[in-house]
Amino acid sequence: MIRKYSLLVLTALVIGSTISAPAFARGTEMQLNGKGFGPPAFRSFCGRFASLCNTRSGARIVQLTADKRHQLQTVNSTVNSSIKQQSDMQTNGVEDLWTIPTKAGDCEDFAILKKRELLKRGWPAASLLLTVARLPFSNEGHVVLTVRTSDGDLILDNRTNSVRDWSSTSYRYYARQSQRSAGWDRIGKAIPIDVTARLK
Image 1 (cartoon, helix red, strand yellow):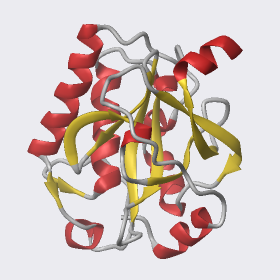
Image 2: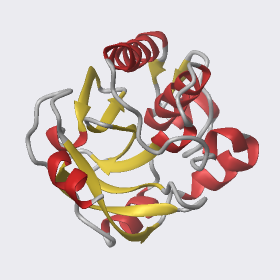
Image 3: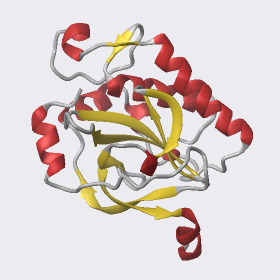
Image 4: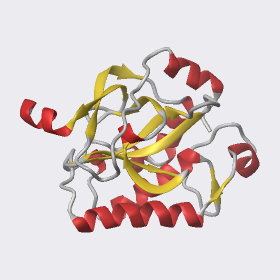
């Protein structure tokens, strides 16, 4: 869970989009609106697991084949079923600690483990981005893994086994790891893939 201080900082930066789109349809990508800020616990995590913070290796967008789709679905559901959802305080005795879970973990720990598992399967680090959002109704901070693909920016989430286009979720998105630096980017509105393809 993201600490309240971190969420307040992110809330002041940007409000994301919640446009509907079907899972795995040719969907949307995240518009970026300049520099963002990651949660403070991310820094200490990178000091301990530098390889999992890397976002500048390999292709930035993965061609989404049937096999790649299956890999995403398998990793998402397998991690969700093998790790028990539990707060950092319950698991580690601290309010906010990003780490690789073994038996239990918070939302960011699920996302981190999914990133590691996809890296093991040969997915490029540049396409796998830890992402900060806010849950509807409760406004609680939430972390998911964004996977950049030819069919849009897809979300791997510990709250569902479905892998969805980011704009089809009910979350407000604030920032994700940058593909250009060790920092974070602010997230804006959803841009249809067919539009962005013409602009590139």
